[in-house]
Length: 481
Image (tube, rainbow, N blue to C red):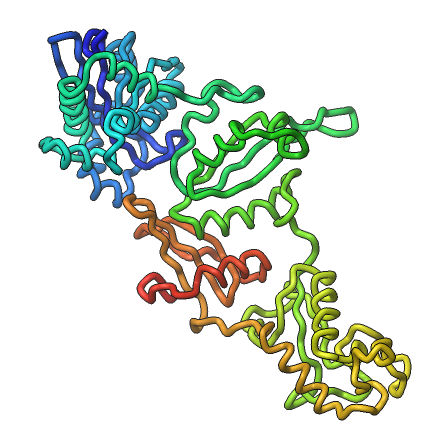
């Protein structure tokens, strides 16, 4: 059977954003094909919310244009009748289908058509080409669009691409490509049907939730249980990999069996995803996240002494400080940081061995008597500064050399800054507000965005993320606040 020997609906939407659960449709365009008969239907849609300025510039659809348009509920029955019984075709069909499924669900209508994605169809038919977006198809096949980024204009381009595909390939090849393009992963057991359909191919954070503990007379009903928080440059690929990978057993398999709901939060890029993941793990304390869960305050080392850091007699040269008690602007005078006291003590022991430092003088062993030798003197891991065999100045020169690589760097700016992060090829962008290696929060990069009112508090994981991502950052990506 030829592709055109069945009722088709080629659909394109314009929306207020990329999340089908939260954003709304602003325009619908449909090309209906019944054999040799072709007709079009389109309408602007009042989304009931303001259209972001970046989206208005991208599509040309403004708040004024949709002010007098019907709400989706007003045209839902007519649109449902038009699409009923037809093969639903769209370029990146998961986006358009996801938005319509959610919009129909809000008015109490089920929408579950057969779906064909022309991005996947193009990849199956033309694997020799690297790109299959609408602009790439237009350039490759010399297709014209009189209204790019408008619903009916883009739907016409998809129609023209299908005409070319049917011209270039025999029906059997088209059918095989459609079968390949239409394959989707089955919904894993425990999740509701369609639970993974709307997950975008975008960076962000995903969350697995399980059933809440059973309520008793003593314990009230609890909210659903956070099981796991993860991040990825491609949410869809990463989440599907969890459920389609081979898990022989252990905690990973148990977590998937317990998962009852999957949620996600898109970000503009990898940095936003990393920062959000670290914050949510500490906030939610998911059952299967171990590495990023809070395990007490982070710590650092400080040199003890007066001017010039000379050590007071009878005291250790180093003291341990908890970083949640340190003003952020004073971080640069410290050494570290360390995730926990245990990590700090382990690092000190290794440093003492490597540099032949006295454990008493660096704070690993108490001062029972000022002249008593430390435990390392007899095994020749200390040169005897603790019992008068070595000049303290010689010892402390080695100590300063050992500490040199641990010194926390100066903050590159005078104070609070906003770091802009943009997703390539997308209108989505974010601002991340930072102050003295502390993460304050993130928000949209629109005209109405403003820095969060938050005190700067040190977080070990945020610090490590910022150290990696701020190196070599373009100057124009940072705004002082």
